Image 1: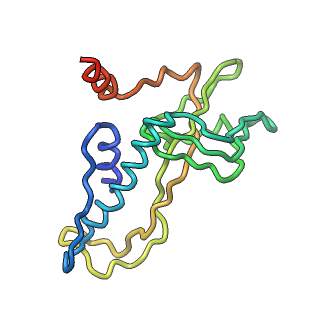
Image 2: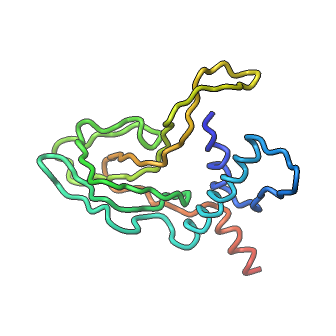
Image 3: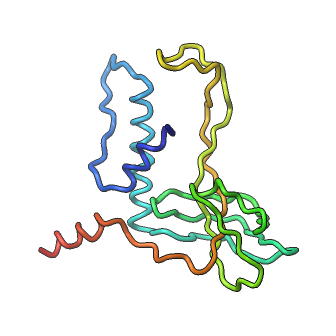
Length: 179
C-alpha cells in the first residue's frame, strides 16, 4: 500500500483537517510525522482544487516534433488538486505510450485518427533507498526509500477527454448553502 493512498482518499472527500498538537515531551513516531506532512498536502490540494481548479496553469505547450509529440515545461493541477510539475521538455512517442501512467491502460491512437487527448498525470516515485536499521515487526525489508519524488507522466487516449466533473460533495455543499 502506498503511503499516499490515505491522503488520496482524503482528497476525494470533504473532511475537517487534522493536525498534530505538539507539547513538550510528546513522543513522535512515523504516524505523527506522516500526519504532519499529510496535513500540509491535503490543505494545499484543497486550496488548489477549489480556487484554481484542474488544468494547465502555465507552459505545457504541445507540438509535433519528428513524428512524435513534444511538451514544453510547465505546471498543471490534477482533479485532486495536486501539482503536476514538468521541469523539462518531454518527447512522447505515441506508439510507445507508457501503460503504467495514470493508473490505467493506454489506447495508442491508430493511424488516421484525427483527434486524441494527451493527459498530464501526477505520479510519485520512490528514491534514495537506505538501509532499514530498525524494522517493524511485520517488515523484513533491508532497504526503504528515503524520498518520494512528485513527478509526472503522460497518457494518450483516442477522442476527446470525457467531461471532468467536480466531486459530489461540491454540489451537496452548494445545495446546503441555498437552503
